[in-house]
Amino acid sequence: MQQPVIELWFDFGSNYSYLSVMRIGREAERRGVALAWKPFMLGPILRELGWSDSPFVVQETKGRYVWRDMERQCAKFGLPWNRPRTFPRRAVLPHRVALWGESEAWIADFCRTVMMRNFVEDRDIDSDQAMFQVLGALGLPPEPIIEAARSPANKERLREQTDEARARGVFGAPTFFVGDEMFWGNDRMDDALELASRAG
Amino acid sequence: MQQPVIELWFDFGSNYSYLSVMRIGREAERRGVALAWKPFMLGPILRELGWSDSPFVVQETKGRYVWRDMERQCAKFGLPWNRPRTFPRRAVLPHRVALWGESEAWIADFCRTVMMRNFVEDRDIDSDQAMFQVLGALGLPPEPIIEAARSPANKERLREQTDEARARGVFGAPTFFVGDEMFWGNDRMDDALELASRAG
Image (cartoon, rainbow over all chains, first blue to last red; front, side, top):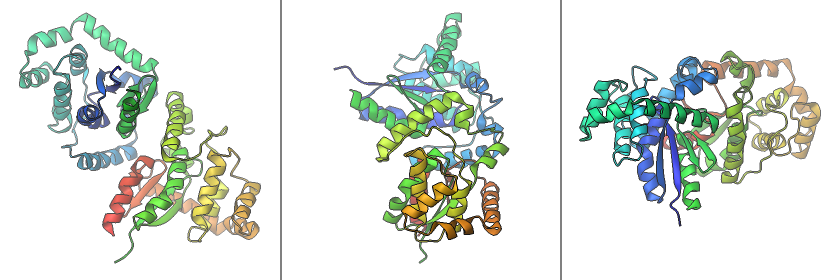
């Protein structure tokens, strides 16, 4: 019997992706579900939907609500939280690193560390310095990883991954796939995991 | 000690409001929380946010997802579901009736019956005939109720109720209030009830 798989499509700039990236490892393991990390660029997809910026920036009323909602959600899940002064943060380089390292043993730790840097430490994540610090803190050699992440082939893969998200109907982040079944938002993570564990 | 109160702000045309209207009675009762029914007109509020129609109509990709999500959510909560051929359905008259009857013993049954007519029977809800049938089925005298609902004073009250929603930061439906704390979406109903029951 094959182990069931859940795909987590996320953007390091997305606050609701922060919740799922931090929570999913333990929840998937508890249910015996394998996890596929799928970083993609949410910005281009939102722009095609007509958003000039994050909906939480464009629609101020909704934005105000979202920051309160994040405080409550983080309290509920026992996660640290500081509203970032820059939102949404650009995240091209960490996406390239995550994509390059998607099958590495360090992928989960890397994703959580980048998310904490954005949504707890309130620091830039899209610079060489940021990646040096994150990878270094995980005991990894930053230079060869950043170089590989920046290779033309890996850059092209991130574009293709974003194209795949669009083609499969992704319009926000986080988004989960269990086979062809799509679930949008951290609020659907448990439903998606439940379906995956039944599919096993 | 005063009984804690949860306010449910809803629009009869809103599919996620359908979930909350059907679910909230039993859940509030179980927790000893009193329920205030708050019908309002979502359409004008969405238009002010820049939507020419429901976001689920304007953004086709999201719309397609929403109908699949509704099937899954209704299955999860044990609710019947048929995707309405007309969406979002106009609901001015049932909103006026619900507002006029907000403190009547029949308000919960009325709201559920209108929602079932829209999202299960797939029938018009904004006509005299629709209201005759709904009120009649509840053993109520339709004519005096519809007449009172249509009085200038009650029409004005619905406009004021919508103004209040806007002033309090409502940008979608369903929305819950527990005191000044706002929760958006059926996905937050349990959190809102939990807060209300702790406040008791």
